[in-house]
Image 1 (spheres, rainbow, N blue to C red):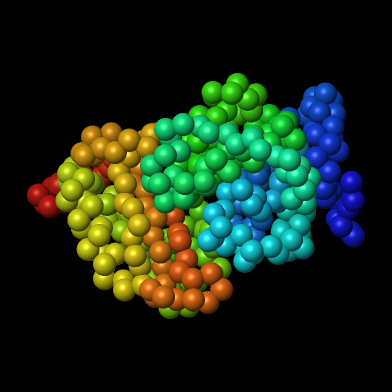
Image 2 (cartoon, rainbow, N blue to C red):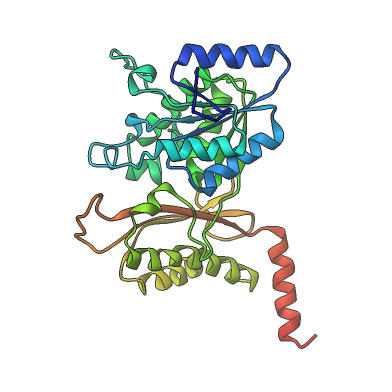
Length: 315
Ligand code: PAF
């Protein structure tokens, strides 16, 4: 393993070496947490690292822009790779090892296997990006073999991805605990994402509307609205007022599933994907595709609804 000058965080590029270091740490009684990333780290990633540091003795972060989860027309080439900056951030937090392998260390030339997790990967993101979850599940399984950690940390922002990974871990008896951590937002509510860096200032200003629409859903439910058609319509109207936002899907899903509901009678994940930017924008990557989600229909919303009603009654 090599160390950055003046750092204690180790950088590893060899799969065999990190695997044996993790086994050795576990044999010595340490718990190991693992945060798989594609780099270009922001506060969302760092919150996963912080969760691992709080719960585990040693934390491994991988930085690997996984080619198999990008379609040929996507942003694999232009995906940001500020490696040096990422290492510094992880070192500052006290991360044990950064695993940053070259592509050929993860995928041998003759690689042909793809993990298919079944129905959870088919709708929504799976429909928009048909090869995406096969690539995600395959690389995450490989990373779990290379970094046999006790716990692995993922962000709620990629809601369907967390379901795909949980399904794979359960189906294939992978001995790792999956932790899903809350979305971290910018001050205007935009969910943190490495792809936010693609937004031009005008696009960035409008992107905050995605969160506004999710907040609207939450407040409609707090006021007593239960019908998904009504909530969806109002959210779409709000987003339609931003000329640079094009909604790709807006789904109301029973929490923990990709199954749509038509009334908010239980905790429901409102998940959306949208393109942000002018139609025909060329630039480095064209229009930016962003994801967000928010859980509504939680118990405390009932209490908020009662509070609203009693305010309206003047109680
Ligand atoms: O969420 C991501 O950054 C990626 O999909 C992951 C889980 C690191 C796999 O490449």
